[in-house]
Amino acid sequence: MSPAPLELVPIGYVRSPYRERRDAPRQGRLAPAIAEIVVRPKFHDGLYRIEEKQHLFILCWFDRSDRSRLRAIPPHDPVERGVFATRSPDRPNPVSLSLVDLVSVDAGVLTVRGLDALDGTPVIDIKPYAAEVDRPGEEHGEERENLNSY
Figure 1: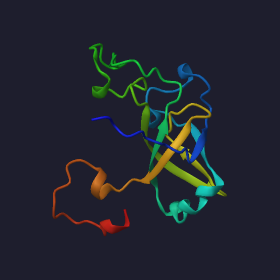
Figure 2: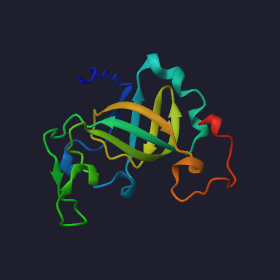
Figure 3: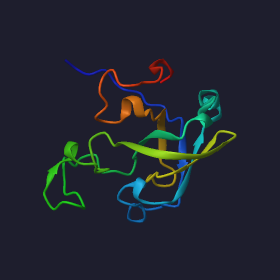
Figure 4: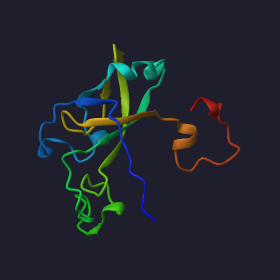
């Protein structure tokens, strides 16, 4: 069975102080740097009421990654692992997932803290963080907000 082609449409791009891979932190959450997500005007309506969220998941396409790599050695552990067992940016489909703090929103530009993407990186999606469903260890039946809003 041949897979159908996928089409990703960047919704924007990153403005970041990180110009080269060596400039970026190992994990964005470990660095206090501020970055901006510039959303294309045709997607601005999708940002409606996003300022009500404190934390966001940002999905980027790490366009400068090595897509042929299948193994990596994490910086905190000298044991080689398959890329699907690491957070290496080098992988067959270099989709990154970053949990960021939303600092502000102004005319289609989101200012965030905790993003490790390089300047110019395409942004492919933005999703709100919801502790009720995104935090491991939550038991079914515990107090939960209305999940329909996520």
